[in-house]
Image (cartoon, rainbow, N blue to C red):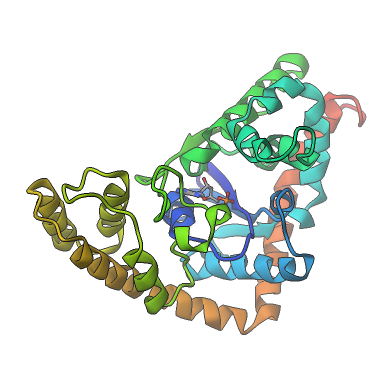
Length: 328
Ligand code: AMP
């Protein structure tokens, strides 16, 4: 078995976008060749924002299908659904006792999301999110957690919690580190000062399911600049081109930006074609997978068994350390 363990999760919030792909999922696929990998569908984490209960299960299956269609191989990576393993909630409730609540109030993501609501109205799940995330991570004792940079602070908090616990009860948890891709932050098409995020609205994102006509339309509205490639929107499009188009094409547009001869209509058209071509086989594979939900469920059930065997070991060790179970 490879020496390094990797773990990460993605929330099933509907359609994943190219930010999720370039910031996280693409990296997962590369990592599975060299490491012991656990990738999960973070369904419990998807409950702290508006959601429709009627859609949630379909979104879980959709995310599983996206993982596999994008290249995760269930025979090499352990793929599972968070809520199906009670150990996640058990460790989260336990760890909550070893972190001051002030640490949670300081989390940027909490402040951003809760800040939009009247004081005291944010749900407790939003505040508690990083504790559940610490449990998700620490159960599998990973060396690295591949995430976009919006999750750095949460991984750091996992290290803090692990550190507090180890100090009080003796060495129990390793200290996980983040692992970034070359694109840890893909920006919104319409407001490139903000990261691409579904919460901003559909036209801010290029979704992995978008058909070519939709990609072309969304890109045609994307913010650029006056023609020198230095604006945040233009930089974001050039970055996407670098990842989705061939090297020569990307270089050609980079050069044109430097020489201030770039034509954004051309860039957008070329980019739309490159992204559509790139996504086509992923979309086809995903459609085939979703046509057989029983098979997807079988894969998730096998993943849950594998993940639980690891999670239970950590949980038992924790319960022993804190005296909830007899010692050795
Ligand atoms: P989430 O949708 O919040 O569950 O995010 C799943 C993964 O995608 C996490 O690793 C995030 O850091 C990453 N991610 C989300 N949005 C972006 C973005 N705009 N750019 C890069 N990575 C992102």
